[in-house]
Length: 239
Image: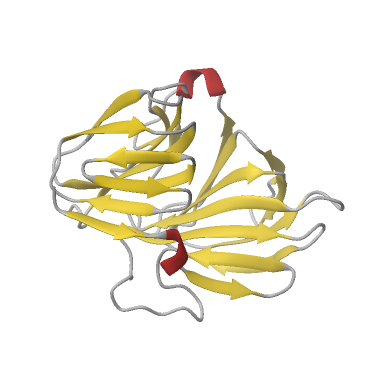
């Protein structure tokens, strides 16, 4: 397998008192020319926001922006008039398209919120901005990759403007599972949220990331109870 390993401790780090952010790829003041993304993934940030704090209203264009709360809840407002709370177990996606402004705040005034923020380059440019969120049951993720986000509308997943799939698996200790790549030419980026797993010959610990560019099906062995995100993403733009 052709792999790239991003150990947790090698990520970029920013501490703004109200926000602690760890960057798998170059972002803001963290710049690493060898970490400009993986395929069409541009950003994977692991953010912890203090109570009642958050990101003031700011703009985006032509980017697919995904938020996955790991603990706590986010409060979202945007220029399309959406006002929502996104809780742990839910996933939010915005297609920024031709342009959108939004804010994201910790909904709690007592507890931190920890969430993953993922940016993926879009397939079509300048589409009408779009917002969606959905809750997912843990049972469907047990020892199995359950699709959260997919290119086409479905009752089971949320739509993204790209030939990309995001899936989550909750793995029991000593369990094995497999992931089959959804589209030829796509790469697979794994981000281990918690636990310890073996993918190929590599062992991943919590918050490690691993990209694979040349495999159609991957077997994963969980050494401990683990939560694993898989991003199945084009390595280049499809025209």
